[in-house]
Image 1 (spheres, rainbow, N blue to C red):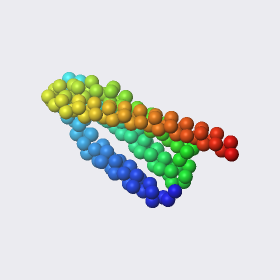
Image 2: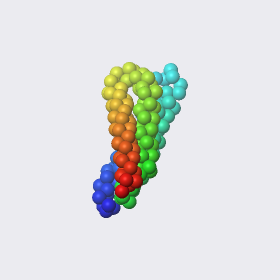
Image 3: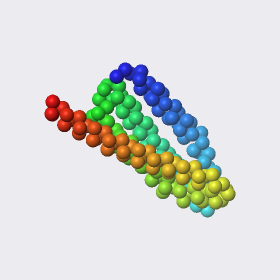
Image 4: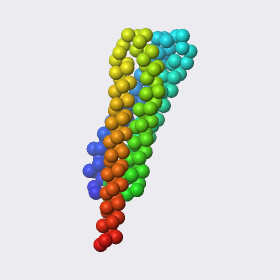
Length: 160
């Protein structure tokens, strides 16, 4: 397959990663400081909020890296291989990890939303949890379909 056929998808992956990097550099520290100001009686509030948000950024970027690997396999015409299944499995686990981190951090965001009287904080948290769940299920379905396609391909190769 031509390398240019996945160029748009590679560009999309990069364009997804850049705003999240900007958020991690400029916005997340401010959110941590805001959390410390809103809930001063909880000493580690800033640290915990930063831990959840930066902790979720790590699997996010690892999943983007796995998407690049998957696109490279598609370029090499090896999309129906065990490496593709492995990449999808890693993406699935990364999405699940992000969702679980935000589920674990939702009480912290609830405290912030309650003190600031801003329910949008919880809405964003629940949106991230929902999006992670959707990506986890979608990656699991694709992983299963790809595994079945590889098994059928192997059976056909043995038949012929």
